[in-house]
Length: 100
Image 1 (cartoon, helix red, strand yellow):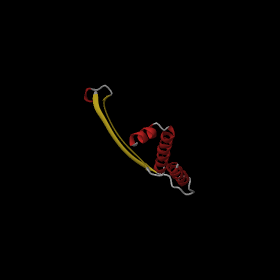
Image 2 (cartoon, rainbow, N blue to C red):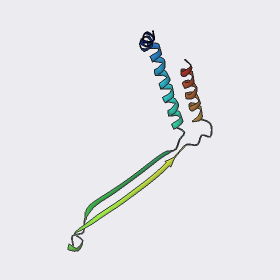
Image 3 (cartoon, one colour):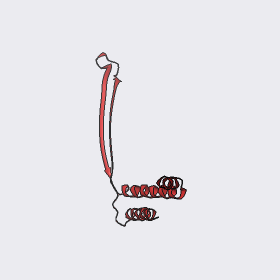
Image 4 (tube, rainbow, N blue to C red):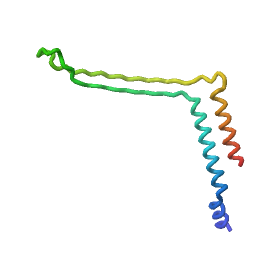
């Protein structure tokens, strides 16, 4: 009987569709929550090359190097709930999918 129940549940497309919808709703909820977090970016670069001088033997070739590093952080303040509302809606959809 247990094997028959497992087989019936495994072949039940409605249950699979409901599971897929639940996973989709949870992913949308996570995405809405992540939109409220700060965005942080970092970068670095280094260049090295040989610069040609003005033709005199003393400065015919000069080694040129430069290094750069940067850090940025940005976030949007949610003064009027523009970010909170999609988060609440996604949470409600996930809960509704779980209830189905």
